[in-house]
Image (tube, rainbow, N blue to C red):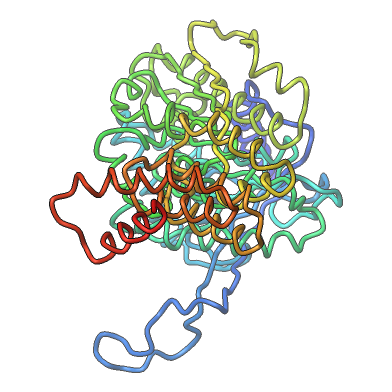
Amino acid sequence: MRFLFVSLLFISICTSAQTELIYRNLPVGKYAVGFKIFTLTDAARISKPEFNYLGEKIEGDRRRKITIHLWYPAQASVNGSRLTYGDYCYSNLLTSTNETISDDQKDAEMNRARRSVENWWGKTTDEAWLNLMTTKMLSQSEVPAIEEKFPLLVGMLRPLSTTITNELLASNGYIVAMIKGENRSTFAEAALDDIADMRFAIVELQKHTNVDGERIGTFGFSGSGFSQVLFAMNDYRIKAVADIESGIYMDGLYQSFSASDYYQPGKMRAPFLHIFSTDLSKQERFIDEFYNKTKFTQRYRLIVNQPALHHWDFATEGYTSCAVLNMRGAQQENIQRAFKIASLYLINFFNAELKNEDDAGKFLSNKPVIENVQDSLWTFSEFPPFKAAPDREAFEYIIRTKGIDEAISVVRNTIKEDTTTDIMKWFILNSLGYNFMGEQKYKEAVGVFKLNTELHPDDPNLFDSLAEGYEQSGDKENMKKASAIVMEILNKKPTLTDAEKGLKSNAERRLK
């Protein structure tokens, strides 16, 4: 019995020391961290057909199931046991925290994790691997949450890889919800389910008393960061978005990313943090999309300058290969520093954008001194947003509240930078102009029609609308000037369609 007690005590001391090795140089916050896994049902989505491939009727619930891994600020518990690294290796197999799986399944997942690490960085010893598997992390399973509101960060689960990052964020006062996704052939295809899952999860999580539904962000690592960026382009609940080494602007990856109908960079309004390694950043052939298309929001770009930084060094696997496995040679101190830099900027980014913390804003605006980290190890750039042009709804609102002259001035001052607004579509403005004319608001109607001709100076139909606006308002002189332009454009055409013949007839009548 004495031998068993001493052995257990030794293991406890060792795993505690290993925990210290992981977190001692990282920005751990003031909160204890809770962790749970649960599965929601989206009754509005049927995810399986009624019959299978063989024509057999599928029994059971065919509604969409959404499994969420949740990290949250928790009440400190002296009795609760902390999760180990090994627990996280197989947690992706679970649909609830207390679900039971076989030891064989657990071993298979831990062995898979070991094979990945050894494929990337070479062999490790059984003893070292066992030490890592038994290392305790920050999280405690199913401990009570703190009863106050915290910002919500939602994303797609990257099993194991963002575990340390998720724990750090939760310890700094965030609720982190990572949704288990499905393997898809392209990022564009994955986004169809991923975005619907994240939207559903947000609605359900907002029902919890400790979730602040007004402060929602999203982030992801590697391929699990693509859907989050697409999500932020299309959902105005998202107040901040970050990707960590996602490669969305790299050749090959960008094509799949931008093929999604959700890819609308001009609609992005959430501040955006793009974190990347210096070596891979040289392959970002489409980074112009970040600078010039995602330009109507605040953008930040963090480049970690450590040479030969491995893609997985931004993840739990890379960090622990240094901190615990001690297998990365002379560069492992800088690899850990690189992870620390990325973690600090991620936390301060969300603190600035979701919590409005002044110190976090200063951290982003002025390159800080980071203890034991040389400032040459990272480059941080900030890009202020351009003013977007108004869409149809905003344009009409400005007309009705500030007047047509102010509205047109706003468009003229912004349209050079933003050609994505829907008022660039001739039929949008034409319809709006006729709405005003139907209300006998002729000054507004003529102003809208005139703007339309400025944007589309070769379209005789739009000058016909302008002539009609002048005609209805009683301005015969300008009616004739607009009609003359209709004739000028049509006379350059060798043949006219029936519609164009009608425009010519209108112009001739007005010119008499």
